[in-house]
Length: 184
Image (cartoon, rainbow, N blue to C red; front, side):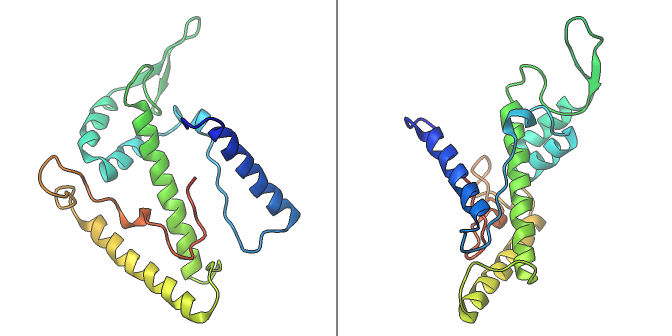
């Protein structure tokens, strides 16, 4: 975190959040999702890596497709090589980026599912009053329209400026007012 005690603060926050839930003292519903990042690095299927890179980092998609084009093996001393179709190669400098692309897509899908359940009336919005609920529902509907337009656009159409410039990100990554999902 680059802040003395920063990781400890996050750990304490997570524990206090859990304790509040366990004690029944949370005043509003909350979704808490924890990803085991320690063990996920080599676990993501190659297909998921290619799909995430195609969607969010199209320049890397061709590289990932090329790397995954032939069978790969887990290589360890004393045991026979084992074929694999997931994770980064041993020593692959793209591994952290590829894992983060897949984690980002998982977070995106989770936000969409929770907000869709809220919009469908299966989970409550974190707002009070009918007027506020209508406002957040309208914001959700507007975001869905913009997300559909983003999905339909080609990577070239998503570029800001010109070739080689930055890409517009999906509106699904925006924070939904009254949505109840926060990324830490």
